[in-house]
Length: 92
Image (cartoon, rainbow, N blue to C red):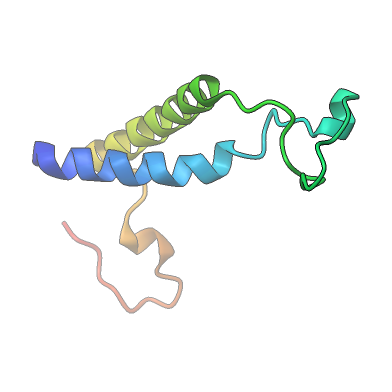
């Protein structure tokens, strides 16, 4: 696999990981016991830490990418794995 493909796949996994990581570790103002600002949404986070968020996202994306590359190298899961009706022939 070319390095440009690997970078593109890592970027896609990082972007997907954002949505996996986003809801974890977030406390609303009510949960933190603080006063809400007028006009603030009830679900808005009390404190948003972009550094910690980026670090968590990078860790999750790196683990996902490592699993993807290991599967690419060793072929643990292939298209034939999901062929439940016998339409595809195995590749030798």
